[in-house]
Structure formats: C-alpha cells, structure tokens
Image (cartoon, rainbow, N blue to C red; front, top):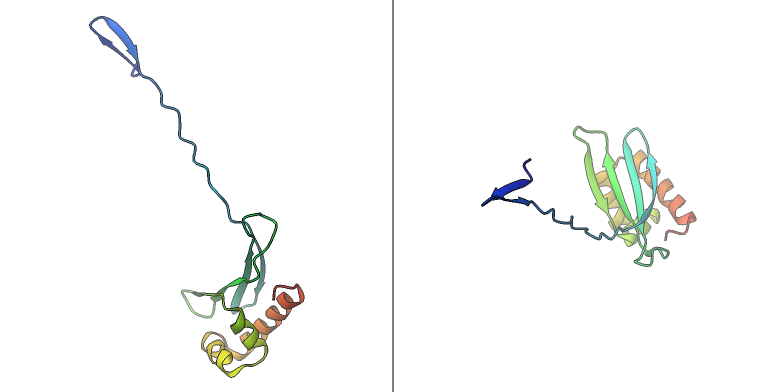
Length: 120
C-alpha cells in the first residue's frame, strides 16, 4: 500500500508519470575486416542521413596484437592510404612506425581489396 496515503480521512493514490520516450538517431555503416596473427584492420564506411548513400571516405581501426596490451589506432586519411599503396616515402614513414614489413604487405593487400570494392 505504498502508493496510497490518507489525509484527513481521504485516501489519495500516487499518480504515475508517463515515461519519457527519447528519439535516437542511428548512424549506419558497413565494414570490412582483415586479421592476421599480428594485426587487425577494420575499415568502416558510414551512410549519409538518407540511410542509402555512403560517404566517400572510410576509417580504419587498426590493432597491433604483437604487444600487450594491444595497441589501437584510428586512421582516416584517404591520401595516406593511397600513398601506402604507391610506396610514397612520406606515407611509408608512418606505416613503418606502426607495422613490420610483413604487416605493411598485408595492409596493402587489404587496401587493394577495398580499392577493388570501390571504396576509393
């Protein structure tokens, strides 16, 4: 009987407030993932607000599993991705800081797959 109270001989019942409904807007995406024993690359493309058209660019979530705790980075520079594919010295300098030579080869394979899919 916690929802009732008597005041001066009159019973009152607690009113319940309607729950607030909060409208949320989701951002939809598609992803492609490639994993080796040493690394994970997860490329993500986001849909525009219409839910049907994809943005031109994409992001890559990179995980280096060679060390504990795993090192995570987020890359979103399309020109850098293209530079890695073309062995651009500036792009390769950054790639060497994050990956070993076999990792860079695997990353290039991944980027070529994304290129074949029309991601850039």
